[in-house]
Length: 482
Ligand SMILES: [Zn+2]
Image (cartoon, rainbow, N blue to C red; front, side, top):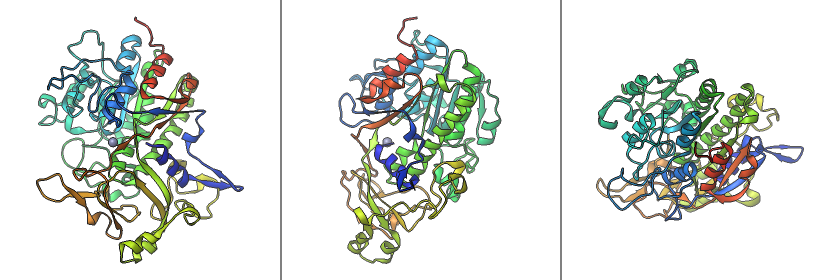
């Protein structure tokens, strides 16, 4: 998530009421806004392992490191470790912990709560650490998360990609977890038990494909390993609300800590698929809105701090609009670029239904959230990132599935060139990154922190990502030794 992605969402969600611009984003209604700096200990640009470690532990580390200071030895498992806020919270309070992501669950952001390794790619051991914690460190008193929801069945099914070939569905069940593999089972599973929910192999399908271009759910990615298509898949909202129900039922007295990640905003931004990133950003906003409603319903809204932030940004921005009908009709790259309108020629968003009433309930938005009614309007956003591989742009939604902007020029080398098929009607945008990059990369931009609830005042202003750990720890009363 980046500030500019939120601005684009705001642009799409905009309504003008009595000549005044009005946004409907839930994120715009938080009482406190801060900005965090995301750089790592030894590089300007962070990855998600490094930044999740900073957010969860108060230690800046290095790229690819989870919960450790990387040492000079080659072993990924012998580096000096430190506790995450989930480990400290569980050890001191016996409170509940929930970990939810739309990524494969061994990915860095969920992994950094329990994994301690200098190599984020140790996916099998990461999943083992969710269940068993840091087994050779007696001071860690980890008993497993109450809730673990996401994708990444590869590390749970017995075989080559699970830790020591073990069946982690079975191992979690053996430790008292209910195991659910689809949205129907998720919604009906009882709230009083620890619950593992794995809903696909790899990353979960994105909002746009789950809700609009459903024929792209043809990935052979069912979480039971039978290579059927995972079609009964929860979104971030369904997973998050169920996680809250379970945490509230099990730990109302001691309290609970939940991290819920809209992972594909970043993943789709890497492949320059701004529509899919935007769909998942709007799903995040809808999740936040429904989280507040859920907390209110449970009587927990006054005692729950809600933080919405990102672990890093991409150099994304919008500089105008594109007349896609004009672009498609031109035959040369130079003429196609005339389809871009800037300043007064940029116009306004066409993603909402023209002339529709201000009441959102009458629009074809999913459950009242500000999702576009039309993902394929004539006038679209002129979007770009600051660092990219060679690619083509036609500024239109990719209806046949997530983008592949660049492809390898040979079978052997990391030498990426434009993928003509990715945007046939578009024009060539020359890459700025070294040619071994197939995707866009993270950037240095500060990212916003939205805060509401107890201690919200700690999160205003500009600060470092590690300060978020210290502020959360202070708010949870973790600055104690017993
Ligand atoms: Zn990323």
